[in-house]
Image 1 (cartoon, rainbow, N blue to C red):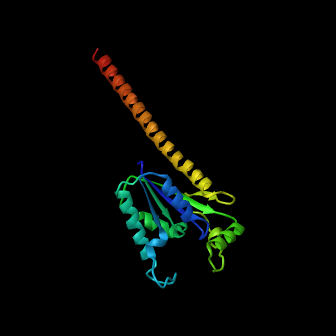
Image 2: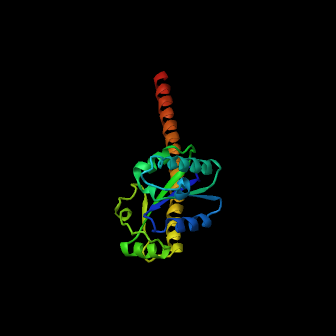
Image 3: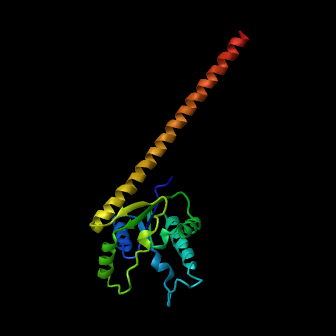
Length: 201
């Protein structure tokens, strides 16, 4: 396990991914941020464009570059990261090694999404499609209703820090296992030598 963390933030449009990701990014030293919207910025944009998934290759490349550049915290925010069929290939194509992935899905009530949609000045019809999606299997789900950005970031950081604690516990557990194995080997060797000595006697 490594000190490097790839932090993935997904959720519905207008739930607050980019705002939260920016604050989280600024709260960590030696950090980098990749917003999925930057990876396929084309005109006209269409979800029917057969080239659309080529943007995922850009995401894998940028995340690989950040991780291979030894940033301790690499933050990736995107609505498409909600889909297992998209996130898995993105992660699979990352060329870096020895980093820990921590995933978050941000959610809220339909009423909160409507309010944030209006605040953003988006004149398109609000869609609740992404609120109803199952979260990514290993993600931590954070309900953002009635929470400030600072509160959400603080909640996320406590989980990320807990991952660090678990990492230390992992190394300590492995150390104890090695010590026990060594003691067991010494005990077995002593038993063998004792048997040989008795047989010779």
